Each structure stands twice: as C-alpha cells, then as structure tokens.
Image (spheres, rainbow, N blue to C red):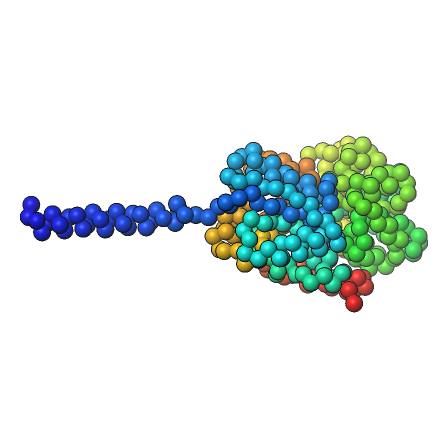
Length: 336
C-alpha cells in the first residue's frame, strides 16, 4: 500500500468515527433532571389533586422512571394561587412541575390574581375527573328528572353541598339550576369527604361529589347516584354498589337534565423551559399512564381516561378557558 493510500484510509476512518460520534451525541446528551424535581399541588393534603400527585410519585419510584426524586409540595393558599404563582415565577427552571385541576381557570377569574394557564408550559392532560349528582339513598328521588322537578317546585329550599366556593362544585350547581329552572341553597365545605358524610346524615338534599369522594357511601348503600355530568357514561362495568356499576349511571343529559362538566387533571412545567426538557416530561407521563398501577387507579376513581399532549392539549385548554369564563360570568363569579 502506498503512503498516499494509507493516508487516505486513515482520513476515511477518522471521518467515519467522527460521524458516529456526532450521531451518538444527541442520545448521550439527552436532557434529564440534574436535581430533585419539585411537584407542586395547588390544593391541600388528602384531596383529589394531592392523591393523584402522590400516586404519580409512587409509580415513578416503583418503576424507576426518573433518576432524581419527585418531591410533592402542597401550596394551597389563595385557592391554589400560591402554587400557580410559584411556578409562574420559576421561569426557565426545568425542576418544577405542578398538577392542575380546574382552579387553573376559576382561581384567577374569581380573585383577579395575575395568572393565566399560558404563564406556564403545558405538559399533558392525564385524565378528566367526573362529577356525579348524589342524593341520600332514603330520599324519594329515584332519577335526576324526579329530583329536578322537586328543585323547580321548591325554589331556594333544596340544599346542595359542595367543595369550596366559586369553584367547580358551585359552577356545576349554577349550571344545574339553569338546566332545571330552579334554585339551590349552596352549602360549601372544605372537602368532598365531609360533603358525603353530611349527605348521608340527612343535612343536605344532594351533592355533586367526584366518584372517589362518595364511593364508600355508595358501596354501603347510603347514597344514590342519579347521573354523571359527562357526555358519555363511565365505561367501568364492574359492580360497585349492589348490582350497579359506574356504567349503569346515566349521563345527566340521558336523565333529562342536560348539564355536563368535567375537571382537568393536568401537568404543567415552569414557563420558558427548553424543548428537550418538555419532551422529557411528556415521555415520562406517557410511561406513567401506561403502567397497570395507573390503569387500576383510573378504574377505582372512575376517571375519564382522556389524555392529551402538545397542540391537542393547548387546544383543549383554550376551549376550557372560554367555557369557564362563560360559566363564571353567568354565575356572577368574575372578579370586578
């Protein structure tokens, strides 16, 4: 082999090696958290958002989906405004996430706090939480239509229990008033568990609790489910209360009370994070929702398993914001 041929071969080998190194570089340099990730819950401990955040934390640990720990921190002040503003103020920090419910919309609209969902980076919708119209099992109301007639015939006398004021439960109550042509006395409580206890005790006429908040009392035969506030029935057909499954509960529209409302369970990151950092968290969530642990949780809580990422999620958020603004305006709940 001549010196020229030998030199040419060495150059070719070097070029191939360089190309291989460049090809491998993106994989080797793929972003992942370099320190513990703060996972903010804009609500108190023990509620639905807190339970879901801690389940996510447990699944990630169990299946070793992150090399760094996910630390759950509750920031419930100002109906969640404390948590939202903390994430909004962490611009460019990829080590801060927040789990959101529909107070993402209602809190800034009701309080005037300077915050909007666009102030954060949308990562993904994990699910939608259902709401069910419940009455005491000893009440005379067998269907939502029966109860609607009673509310219309007794304006301002029927007590509806819910969690918080000017939030999801009260919004549903206002929408229900419009649908039935009646008026409730809305009674706010700190949490859905307390609402269920008060309804069983006969201190309320109805509630709009989430399935998980009232399932124990339903299973025990103390409550009756009249309808679900969604456009489709829940798909879960395993028997829960006697011979009834979640799937046996009609939609409110089916039951003659055309009202629907579902609550967001979504994840956002701080504003201004990089595309590869967003991609990391999107992939993380996709791995979480594919686990059997997550699927079991979805069925037990009777969630709507609607997931969205990217532009699909942003489109949903835009429409949901408009819907909430209309509901809040109609109810007179917008900050002045």
